[in-house]
Image 1 (spheres, rainbow, N blue to C red):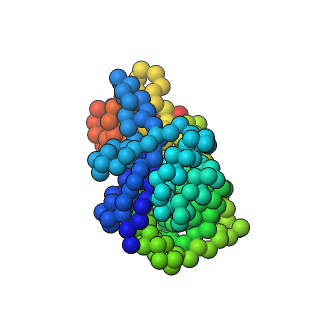
Image 2: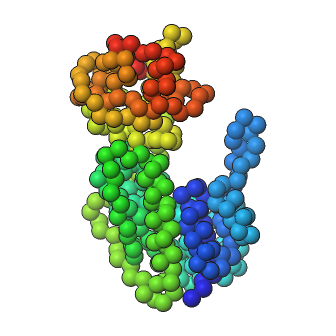
Image 3: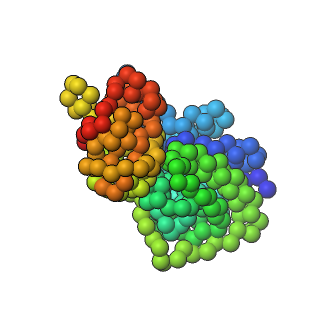
Amino acid sequence: MTLRVVFMGTPDFAVPTLSEIVGQGHEVVAAYTRAPARAGRGMAERPSPVHAAAQGFGIPVLTPATLRSADAAEAFAAHQADVAVVVAYGMILPEPILAAPDLGCLNLHASLLPRWRGAAPIQRAVIAGDAETGVAVMQMEKGLDTGPVAMVERVAIGPDLTAGELHDKLATIGADLMVRALPALSRGGLVFTPQPAEGVTYAAKITNEEALVDWSRPAGAVHDLVRGLSPFPGAFTTIDLGKGPERLKVLRTARAQGRGEPGTTLDGQLTVACGDGAVRLLQVQRSGGKPMPASDFLRGVPVPPGTRLG
């Protein structure tokens, strides 16, 4: 059965789901996304990834600043959608919006609910050292990611997997999950189960302060922080390369042998002592530069043993 769909999403993560819905022949009558943001050196307005993808499909794009006005509710209801599909939209849906589609609003969330409700579930799962995560199709309600869940796909998190790699994997799996959920929903065959009250955690947005590497923490925690923030926003430290302290992003590490004063290099290969154990920096990025292997970085700027990182 072909459904009339309103799609609501903003980042790259949402684009595969939009593409799959279109590819399955559903009629996407509108795409809601966040308004273009100014970025880059010229501060030009850049449409969101969903905005660009929707335009490519010829789908009308709406970027309302709020959904809480009577006008916004009336405009949304006028789409006469069977269902709204929401993937990382970035705005809370008020009750009139939730109630408008005949079959409700489905949300694709990148965690095993109720663990990691909220804004940054992929990064938080990696930073916490979780062994697995997944994607869930849930029925939206007023609370933040509190609705009943219909379908789940679990994904293992390898010990060196970065948040960026996990993001791409979950985006693809989630798109497939959602397009399997839609026909089941149309047939009345999608069974929703309330989330358990136990095990609730919240995935708050990443702050700049917590992206600063604390070398006094155990090596495992440092390694998980680095991969959980790679490639964006990137964990960082400071280092003096002869012109005073400068910021250095750390994008990939490996657990390493060695002990020493936390934050001190143990060799000339960027092995850094932590509060317990050590990590070796594998990929770094200087301010204004591009990500590079640590071996390339060291060819340009040797870092002798005993160098202190911030």
